[in-house]
Image (cartoon, rainbow, N blue to C red):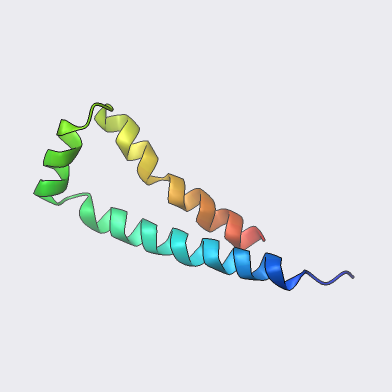
Length: 66
């Protein structure tokens, strides 16, 4: 069985850490009235902005598979 390069392991842990923190902060801020006000001023539709909140989850999952 081949061993994984250290660089791949480091990158995977970075993806897991950043993805996890992003998921936690975006989930915590979703019910904040100031956040909702800023989201309403953005030219992107609100549903698209909610989908963008899921993007860190992809990095989190990719880091877990690394």
